[in-house]
Image 1 (cartoon, helix red, strand yellow):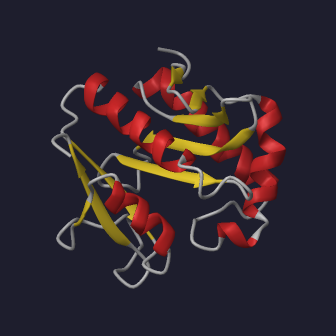
Image 2 (image 1 turned 90 degrees about the vertical axis):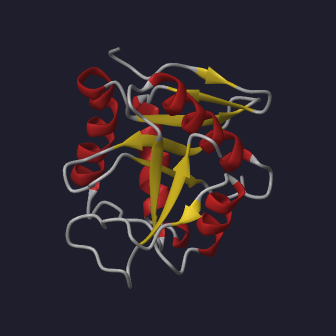
Length: 172
């Protein structure tokens, strides 16, 4: 697989990244909405992360998707990834301003999670690494059926004060 598969549900569409997604991502990372995520220090680092998630499809068969609403609006991003500093495969999400409260993040994360469990060999669990102050992401992880896993190994260089781990299981 060289690019992200397209996944459609009744309310959203997960699609491969496009170059036109870069500017909205940069705007997100400059906004207060990015307070709880590890964002890029500059546009070059944004490009590295963006290209890494797009290229991971060809190298690892997993990566990131852009989230579109049914009317084609870019609403955020969801990814199933495992960069070298992550001890486990993670599902992570971001939602752009103005799209909250509509079930978009839930639909996107559920679609990506289900795809991972159905497609990736040996994928029986995923984790979400979340800032403990990010109550909205914790609530979404709980809604997805994930449970707090205080025994999980944290990403390299992170502490329990910075990161909590929520575990998604195939049976969830």
